[in-house]
Length: 442
Image 1 (cartoon, one colour):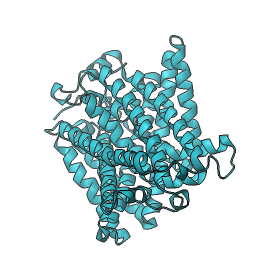
Image 2: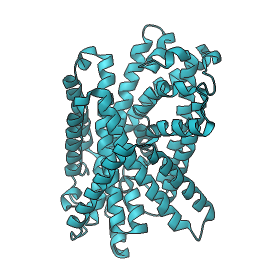
Image 3: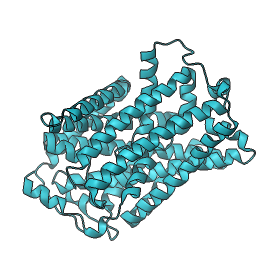
Image 4: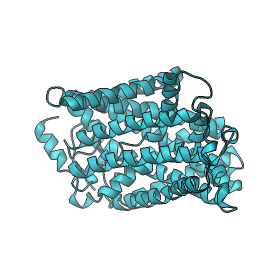
């Protein structure tokens, strides 16, 4: 892509579409990160003991390093696409396309996964909606399409809904933290390392388990074309979001440990509901409603992002131009509808394994794809700063090492599926490469 065409792309976004400020960008990243993961992880981590808190610290450091890298890269462009743009400018069209392909796949898998979690928690709140796999699949699909309808209306409306859902989902988490420090007991905190694992092994395992909860840290960098003063707003928003969520996750995990005795926590299917028992008879319903809102917010954020990446790629002539067509609300409607349709198909194909089986496979695929995106972003910063900013070189190397460590825990089956999907991406790249760059149009 030539310098002149890059400058043209920089100015493509209509002025009226630049509707996202700091809080909308912050809400996008926080809203995507704080989804279903944190509400199940206290039980998963309980057998490891309180050393799992150090696992959270390790993952938080990795997420903050990635946020610093993404924020620095965001200062260098106003183009939408985030990691796609960074990879393309550093390594060329093929690498850029594969990163866009991988990121889009991670979002589509995440849409399906979070909709599964949404259906599960809503079924816990309204038992009739969790009566069978078929009913749960229909509820999950309905969640995707209701929020797709909201996103189709306008960029600004989708951003406002995301910020509102983010604020609402934080309330039950803050209530649990407050409850722990007023009614909890430090005596409930598990032993440091009850399984007597090596510290390195325990930290590596718990860090991998907590990685899914941080997926989405990059969300604020994707829609740069819709952000007011993106070079200033996006770095501040993405770093603030990473710090917010890191502090929240560590405090919430400690709080659950203080509120639920370890022998009960290790077998709990709903640790937040168990922790809320101290609130009285209304506590369980309050927390369950909070989880439903949290998963709805995560789903809404992923649906919003699913339309942005194909549009960015199509603007450069690396995907069909129909992905650039905007509706009256400045939303790339074809891209949005196709993403939601594919997510629905993935949802239905995987629900034969039941809610937990579907959720596990989908989050594994999504996490692997997004880790690839993070790794290439770190390499893009490494290349950019190699001779001019040695401090940033160190940060980029640490970020890259972190993503490789996390990806290694995906397992051979997921890695094999991921390789197949990236090979398919190469086929699409060469099929589309003769297309010409286009401008956004309504």
